[in-house]
Image (tube, rainbow, N blue to C red; front, side, top):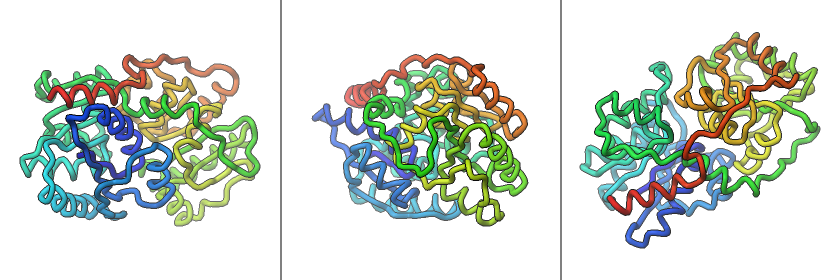
Length: 352
């Protein structure tokens, strides 16, 4: 039983579901918790990724971390009591991940964690709490890179339960790269910077968000800025009266996966605080500037195209200038990021 709830989960689950279809001895079902529920954050991804309709939709919607996690637990428990699976597969580090893992393990059902072992070492991030706790109660660990294996073993996980399979998000990227499509954006220029920001450290403080927008406005005099706005960020822009940006900063609604993939491919540089985008830009060999003090995906900075700039807007401006003047960081694609991670997981599940 696969558990998905938020946009990043869909890209991770899709290749695993597809690969399991090739093993007739494995039956599978899909639970959508409804953590991301509007069309641009959820339904369009099912459509574009070719995912099956969910067998169960818990429709929990938004809310505080406590309320959302609790609602998922209550409704998911009803599902597995009525139809208990042999294994629950959870993905990534969102509230749906830890909620489903807790319910399953307390019901005596085995849990597999896809993208296990990642650590930012920053306990102020809700996602870090979700990652650490999920790994404490899982039975099988499917990791994207060697650092994740090391983190798990350091925390006492039996090495026999750790399977380095590669990066399932890259499976989806490779499969759909040729289908990426140019979005319709009025006034879009050939050269542009792509920006995505949604984490509390960047958008919940009016002074920090104001500095970021001022930097983007200044940069937009040299190159266009395309900024798809996460619903959380849009609320903050309106709350802080910061929606009035320069003419060359294009604030748009979120895009579907295929459109956003096209934008990443064609951007001069990507500015983000998203974990998954750090990975995708590393594979695409597009310069990535991450507005965070740390990352749970250090391999993207160690050998990939990612640079951590923290919340230092002066450094952000300097690093963008470096890229625009031909001094972008070069990177390599990590081992096993080859489009076959989902297949490896399916083969392991068939053996187990």
